[in-house]
Length: 77
Image (cartoon, rainbow, N blue to C red; front, side, top):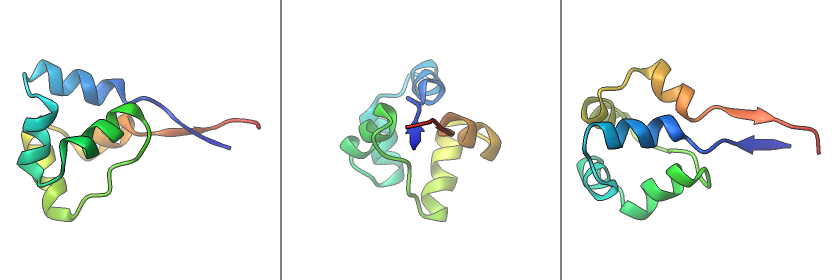
C-alpha cells in the first residue's frame, strides 16, 4: 500500500516566503483548493511544464527539493 506523507516542507517553504495558499495557486493557474489538496497529502501535484517552472520560481525550489516534499512510502497493509 502506498502512503502519502503530508508535505510539511512544502507548507513550511510557502510560509517562510510569506505566501498564502491563494497567492501560490493564482501564480501558477490552479485553484486554492488544489494547493490545499497537495498540502493535505490528499493529492499529488500534476502540473504542466510551465506551471512547474512558475512554482519553482515562486517558491525558489529545485527539482530535488520539490520531489522530496512529495515522496511517498510503501507500507505493509
